[in-house]
Amino acid sequence: MKEHIEKNLSVFDRTDFSAEQSRVLDELQEYIVNSLADKDHYVAIIQGAAGTGKSVVLTKLFKTIRDGKSDKQSPFFNLKTAFTVNHPELLKVYQDMGAKYSNIYKKDYQRPTSIINSLDKTGENLDVLFIDEGHLLLTKPEPYIKFTQDNQLTELIRQAKVVVVVFDFAQVIQSKMYWDQELLDEIVKDVPHKFFHLDFQYRMDAPVAVKEWIDAFAEGKLLPLPSEAEQQGYDLEIFARADDLFTKLKQVDREIGMARVVSTTGFDHDESGRHHVVMDGFDQPWDEYDPQELTWAKRPESINEVGSIYTVQGFDLNLVGLLLSPAFEYDADHDRIWVNPKKVIHREIYKKSPHLQGTKAIAQAKQDFMLNALNILAKRGRHGLYIAAADPALRKRLLELSK
Image 1 (cartoon, rainbow, N blue to C red):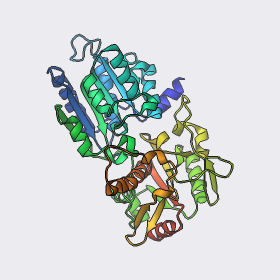
Image 2 (cartoon, rainbow, N blue to C red):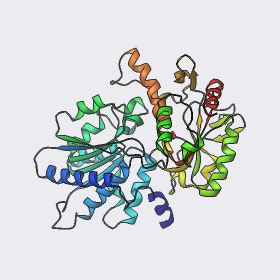
Image 3 (cartoon, rainbow, N blue to C red):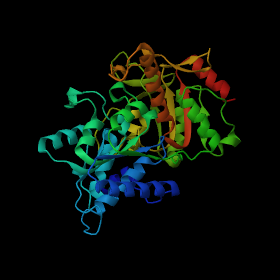
Image 4 (cartoon, rainbow, N blue to C red):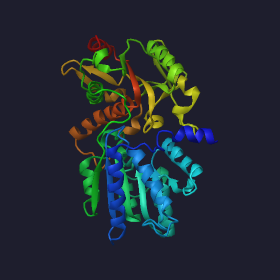
């Protein structure tokens, strides 16, 4: 039990903060203290791209406030607090905090709908609520999970004196969780709020040239790969075949561990109904959400599975093998990646949303959701990224750019 908790928490439970992270922590703590002294509701919004340490900062802040709950000299004495994330694998990690620290309990971490419905039932309110992955909050009713209101953030702000929430619009991947800056501004316009920005990329141990290439790639832009010298040890490589990618990735996993294959939707079920990713000589099953004690990325057997945004979002890997599904095609006219919505298998991401109106906006969202998923997956690897494309034309162009 203790071993799996330490493995799950290794990325989030940190004490080695950068100067930027320490500054933001101090500013957030001061903001919370001042907000608690006022009669209004307040919102603190932490913004930053994938890998900038948003969850690390949020975790440390929650621990600090919980440590002050029993200290009569602390501004956080006797506060009612909770932590929520709309992601089952991340929720599992956070609940492990309750098993490690005496001032935190597993019940302090819940899904948003559970908190909303529970507080409405008891008529209670929270003093401070922490929300990780705020871009996964629902922006439309979802009766299946018993959320009947219009927006989860609106409800959570109503139920908490101070809300501290993390947002990254480049990680919006479904219409039922559709967020952009305009919608967020609309939700908080009548509530005192402040933005806190984290800018430096901590996850990828890569030089600027590599980070810029991956940033462009995640937007669908195709640029020549940085040379081996420019990569400065980061292992960025394009493969002609997925099975060759997998062979090399498994060697990396044997050497340093935490190397995994990932992909987005776009691979069909096979004739027998199996949900496998099949691409030239590669044939491995999709990860199916399996609520085990150890998170997917940490399980030894997951080397023989294909991860998705639902199991790796928010987590670090040492090396990522990214398989671009047939939905990602090459647009020769604009020399870029284009998403073919007809080849997107997981149709749930394209359901109607009250925040997406008009043919042009809907068409753009269909591109953005898949490119955002690409962005999430491409930035998981600390030390390397391998890429193979199912679309023949895209594969050919990527190989040309890697020469």
